[in-house]
Every structure is written in C-alpha cells, then in structure tokens.
Image 1 (cartoon, rainbow, N blue to C red):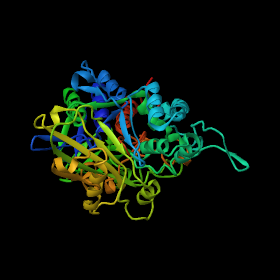
Image 2: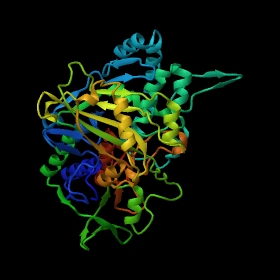
Image 3: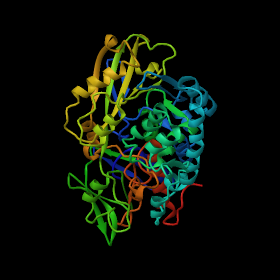
Image 4: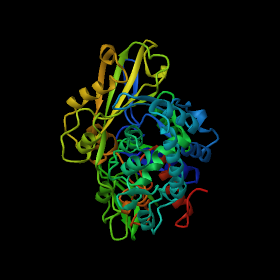
Length: 492
C-alpha cells in the first residue's frame, strides 16, 4: 500500500481482517494524511479537518474490524449548536444540530418570518437529491456507465418563471437566488460549497447534498481533536497486524504479466505484492506506473488541483466564554469579490469568509485560563505565495466573532498550501472535493479500479472523493473489490 492517509488506513484494516498481509509504505514520518496535529506550550491544534460529518462510516469500520466500537476508542461528541453564522449585514444566527424544527425556528427569528420555511423546504428537496445519489456516489464502486450520473441533475429544482421562460436552478447559486430569495440564506447555502473549494456559481445544484448531510447526520467532534480519529484507526490497523514503514518513498509500481506486482522504493529495494493500493493523487499515480492508469477514453478525468486552505492557529489567554459556539462562520462582506478572487483572475479578497473553531475541550489547552482557536479560509492551490497579508485579514474577520481576539493573543502559527502539499503530496496543497452528480461528470472522481489489474486507487482523489466520510468509504470499496472481486457492488 502506498500512503497512510485515512482512506488507505480504512482499506488496510478491512483487508487485514479478511486475511491479507498488509504493508503500508508512507513517505512521511506519520499516518493520517491531512489529519495532523500541532502542539506547542501546552496547546494542541488540528491542522486539518476539525469536525466529523457522517460518523457512521467510521462506526462501520470499527464494527467490521474488531470488537471495540468507535465510541470505545475515541470520545465522540455531537456539536450543538451545529454552527453560528455572522452575515455581511451583521445578522447572527445559531443553528441547532440535526433539528429541522429548531433550524426553521432559529432562521425565522433571526432573518424574518418565512426564511425558516424556505430553508426547510430546500432541505426536503436536498433529501431527494441525497436519496438518488447516496449509493452510487458514496456506497458503491463507480458505475462503468458513470455518464448517467454526469448527465442527470438529481436535485428537484422548483420551476422559476423568468421573463417569458420557465427555468429550473442548475447551479447552487441559482438555487439560492431563485428558491431561497434571501442573501443571508444564499450565503448559508453557498458556505457549504465554499468550504470544499467549490464555486457556487458553477457548482451543480446536486451540491445541495452537502448541507443536507450536515443537517441529517449532525456535526461531530472528537475529544482531543480529529487527530485522535486517525490515531484510533491507526491503532486498529496495528491490532490487526498491519505493518507500517514510515519514511518509505515509493518511486514506482512494478508490473508483471500485465498486472501490478509490487512497488519500488527510493532506496532501490523492491516489495512484491499481489495487489497494490495507492492513496495518492492521480498525477502522482500516473508517474509511478509505466502506463497511464486513470486516463483514457471512457474514464472519469482526474480533477484539476484548484483550491486549498490556509489555517491560522491562535493561542489565547483567558478562558473560553460560557455558551461559545464550537464553530462560527463569518461570511465575506462582498460575495462576488470573494468568488472572483478565489476562482478568477482578480486579486485576493482582503475580507474572506472565515470559519472559526473554538472547541470546548480541556485537552487542547494548558489550563482552563487559556483557549485554542483555529481559523480557516479557502485559497487557490498556489504554493509559494506569501500568506502574511491574508493571515492579518483572517484575524480581522475573526474579530467579528471574537471582539477581544487581538488583546488575548499570545502567539499564532500558520499552515499554508505548501504545508498541505508536504503532508499529503497533493500538487499545490489542493484539497479534493466530494463526488457530486451532474455537470458532465466534472465533480466525479476516477474509479477505485485502474487500468492496471491489481492496482487500486484509494483516498480523496479517487471515488467517492474528498472529505473524511468519503475517504473512509473509499477504503471500504477498495477492500470489497479485492476481497469479493469485480462483482462487488458495495455495502448493503
């Protein structure tokens, strides 16, 4: 196995339980891919994802690979409120976790009568899109006729009369403009796409499943940080006798008699194998293989590396105030300027949308009189650019959620796209997006099978795409394809 990201770890544990000897070669000195941790002066921060949607994927992994369930290995807690939003006009709203009635009431109170109903009706339609795409886009290997997913828009948009024509929303931005009809509700909707580095003006309406997943399955946090989830999966692998070789840089995939037969390492050694699983970006996998692995007529084309993240880690003096929301999204004052800066040729927006994470977790701080805060924003995947000005802008934006932020600041650390590239190997520090239907397949990911028999792709750059739940499912799919063969059709 090449790489020790979360998808690879999930596949390794499942294959070991099925009786395979699994050896993982990881070029860095640790496991977990993007799930890293920074520790300094008694503070601890996640430098990758900070929240876990759809924990059922990892609950299933632990059920299928041992006696101890997930909750016995990590302290999994539901975040409530799910999120707090600070909109451009100063309006603020806190949204309860996994409660449609609570969310409707909160939106009506904050945004005015009728806002909650429009959002609630949207979630009903989003559920239809989820029901239509859940299995093919999350639980099953990519269909050979994946073009069916690419051509059909699963979101049942409401007919909208515009001049003399009746139209239906085809993009997320159109859903917001035509169905939600409130700039703040539109910002709420689009923030779910923006968090994945997607432009709502071009992202298909099928992305409605992103807010629906959070609404239906809740938002979760792992006590001690999401790095603890990586630790738990890694320890489950060790318990199932998976072998790890860190600092082992794979330079090539070996082939014999037309199929993968092992890997070659940078030190010239060779590791033979019946199957090779690669948790790397498609371009990297192509360079490792003697033939083009995931490109060709009829294949899903690899996604371009477009968006990354900048994360600012803040050590604050003073206790976390009672009643503070775990997650606050501070929306950009100028939506179009932000989108143009991210997805067009314009200069970087000086006031981006910033997500502020303030966990109520004593394990992250040296004592109760300090607070660990994480700020995150989306940026283009352009390594090498200075983030100094952006960091200052992010802190200024975050002051709308934490007014005394600068007075309390002890020190800060910044994680850039270059750091993500170092941790994950992704070009430009790009972060893969979840697979989405429609739009000609632009947001689908290459199949877990490759053109080389015996060689499989796992992780965020393979089906079903980026995000912790999707990475976990990619591991389940690859394990199923190896154990059961081509007839494997996914979890039941």
